[in-house]
Image (cartoon, rainbow, N blue to C red):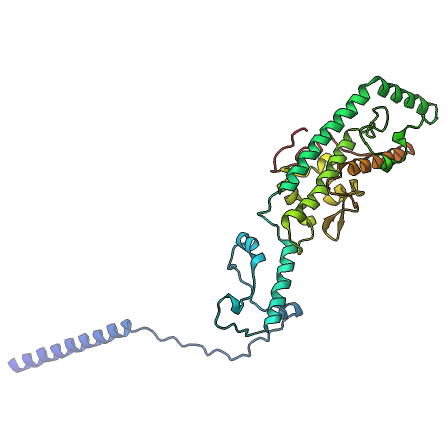
Length: 336
């Protein structure tokens, strides 16, 4: 019996050891990562890349983040140059193109860049400040002279005589002011104290001022920029430079227009755009204020002739705020 008992204990021990062994094997399998059968990727040909003609002309890959900020680039690119041995380099090698082609590439790039880039650091020079001061004084004197003539006995008498003649369908007696404008030497006194601008209204003074501002702006820019590659004020940057020089914004609404091109048409005898550059058809000196006034009087007469003929499209929509600053930033206008 003792032997049978020992035999049973032995079997129990073996069964228990076997169970423990099986349990260890199961735990070991659970601890091992399961192998995932990877699907074999089908080998395919990479897509063929086709470049456009414009892409083929690009030598450098475009970057999402530029090496320089736009402000720093715009301020410094005009002084860019290719390296020269004279600058102290032991050797200058050109890997892609020859030196002459590299210089031509940089020169062309800079020229195109100048056409679309504002000169942020540009400031009005002394010539502009002196010219603006002179015109301000002249403009004030002309306005005072015009008012004095209108209020004078002789001025009132001539205005009344002209009104009666027009009501009768007759022509008033011709004065020197009605003759050849450009033969007038003194616009403030063409005879007996009568000014050439005796019939100026609000819109005429506003247009004279506009002629001066745009005419002077294109001269001042050329002097202050002093760069042959920048022949004048680009149309797309006119508002910026106008604000920089006159410390106010262009008041399109005050002149009764919505676009810059329509504003220029109001003074097309003195200001125009050649391509997209501000220019002038006049060949007078930059500080010839008399010519600007004569152009204003000539335009007034032509406009009045058209209105008398029934052409209402010639009627201007200029408001008293025309010479003040327009919307946005840029400072206000002070009465001269």
